[in-house]
Length: 176
Image (cartoon, rainbow, N blue to C red; front, side, top):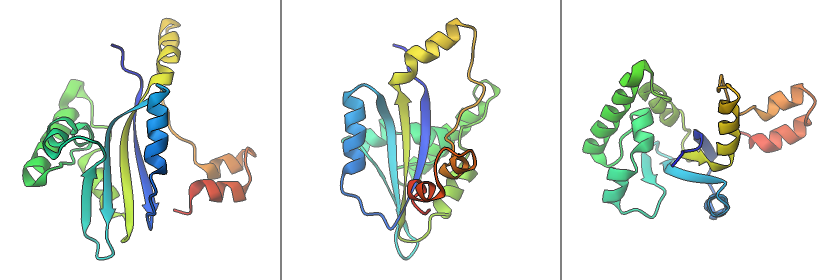
């Protein structure tokens, strides 16, 4: 089975106020075979600066530790206490050595994302497979092409090229 392009999204939420809309939208995208969430981790920092992490799935805690370590493997962030932290760090380090490459999101950057969360905020780390992109990726490969770079464009950069207004950019950015 061919896997589609995989992307790690790190999303921030100031004063989180979740009502299930994000989960519902991810489920809709899964049902339409547009995307598949390979792994998801939610991190909440309370008003005192204490962090709490939770895998977002219907897996048991043991299954999440065993099977839901894909994000931990990419960034070296463990789940499941000291043992899980050590496993995540080891998996992240192993990713750094694979074929001379580096981890997508190194341990220091992972710590920075979590450390930079302001009190009373949350972050969601989503590892998403883009099923919709498989035929396009395969067509590009058949034509001899390859991915050189990719990334999301900030709404404020879209203002600079006249695609949207600054008011629209502020709304899309969410004020983070």
